Length: 117
Image (cartoon, rainbow, N blue to C red; front, side):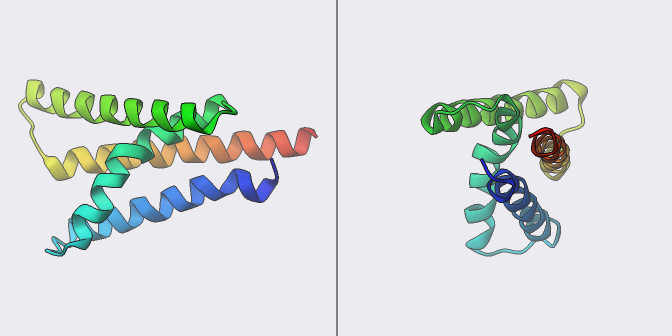
């Protein structure tokens, strides 16, 4: 995998996270809002973690990423309910920060791998 290919997903994910936060925090009522938020919630948090595993099969990566994303969203929502601090925007912010952190870790691993070869 080239350096460019290994950085494509983390950069695209960060851009999607920024777009989702911009749409949600500005309370924009637009068909664009669910079109950005739903794919982000269904794929981005899990993909950021699954990419660290370097699984070569794309279908397996996508299935694991979706399953992990749904599990993380449920974990965040359940934690907020049990803590009595329900906040959809706060939950989305938490998942976004988690996703960005995992993407930074992915970039660091990619750079170290490229330097080692």
